[in-house]
Length: 201
Image (cartoon, rainbow, N blue to C red; front, side, top):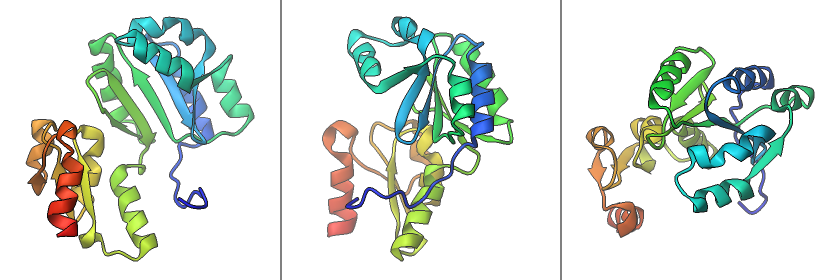
């Protein structure tokens, strides 16, 4: 944190990222891609934010946080930019399910969702669980001594790999089933509660 140095990466190779974005730009989705901590989006999709985002506040947030690029796939290829994540938002849930099935079978990707209307594509081995255990190794902490808190399916791998897994009170019921403990909700400071209960005590 002090040096802001990256200590662990598991990127989508740029060739696969570019080809995938090229295919996704043919679909009726709002697709963006995270590269070096920034989020890039095809320029023509900016005018479609209102079709995919629930309110004006989210539209303003996307305007502030997305970097429009004309010809995004070529931009990725030409600059050899490996990607952290491809993020998709849908207004057609049938299309979401089709693409989720398609990318779940793709050997290059791990497909997860954080909210009902999104799909996240990471490198096949890039999940929060792998990152948690890699950080534990770097810090010299045994895997059994790790704790993870989560509330959605993009947290599943982390919750399964952590030594002690905690579901938020507002978590999906299936996520609660795989955890060692259920804490209070996000609104009730559930993470602080579980740290006080199991770590600081």
